[in-house]
Length: 575
Image (cartoon, rainbow, N blue to C red; front, side):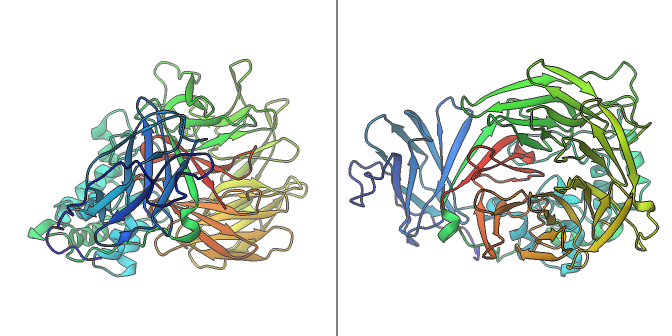
């Protein structure tokens, strides 16, 4: 889609009508709010996300217009009240703000008229910026396909609209490297926070400047990255690209979804992970502040629990929690910053929601953990190069194994990421540096290495289901992968170029698996039985998810914490 000059704004207006333009629109079973989305340019529009928020509420609900331009909110999701309505459709804006009164009786009707946007550049995702800017795939990969690189904290828009030259960009990159990448977010809504890696920001920047590379394992040379960034931004009097390219709007099954977003009470929360208990409560941690949070979606209320504080004069100048896992008894497990561990991710803890008590695990000295996985026997596995097994009855680590020291370890660098446990109680882990999936036999302390078929795919996070299938995101492979741990056979499904899927969920009740893409603001749904891939566009910009959990009750919805704008998100497919 081109953007030459300023788009003309259509004179069509937003109207609320008494009668539906479709005879059966208002008669949809259980509908609370319905309408038609249209524009002068396209007529009735498919794939427009329509979002409604009741006055005073801390959450909003979104649906998507179908092939006839019709949208409908079920009464199960909208209670009576005054609602503000907004849309997301790349290239378009509402011509006037939308408000509507939803009553307990017949469905309210609100038709929405859209006009061409005056500022397409403010609507693009990082994938669309990558499609629009100059450069080779290798150059763009320096920005997008980096562990903890530029897009880990913000979109490409911030870079493209900057005016730094190459020399200035080196200083900017040094400053960016001074922030704690897992506890810093820079979205467009003023939610999230920036957290320096040291108590003194000048010290943090000085430490960052000592490293000639940016990113993790191996990263890229700062001078090379700076030189490229200075060719795609607005330095030297350049304007934005004349022909901004966009992704297509949702169609077909991609429009059959309801998305609910709950605002976390602290606007500066950086919720790296989250999981859901048997009652449907969603639990999350803050990566750079010491509290555990819970959302009760039945009442849309949040409760926060302060974590055990760090001692005075601690070696850590801030604390926070990491991965969250809920066990079969609804205890909440997570690592949190602890004085006994030099690494920020800290020590495994258990929180009992009934007694409101935190219990630390007893681990070997300075054991490094961040991610967790529950075995079928209830034992907890955690670690990176060395994996530790924790007995929940004693809270002690009763086993450890360093798979990077196995006699059959392949040549090259190896970096473990998130472990998962198979139905036999054996741990597996993604190796994003070596591009392997590693399986450990806990009885024999031996390791097996399975090379992911896509080269340089950086497998990152995922889960193992009851059939022993390990689903995972291939961060730089733009695919969702699956390893059958029983046969050693792989399968892979393409997402889209530059999608950077971070993780994958367990299958839902229909056997479908979900993966997030922060670069495209989308959730991808993969059906291993049919190989069908469906994309769900999210209602707001700055979508960034690290962990996904299937609803334990319906088994049809998927829950997640949106890191970049401090929200809990529920995605409910309607097919």
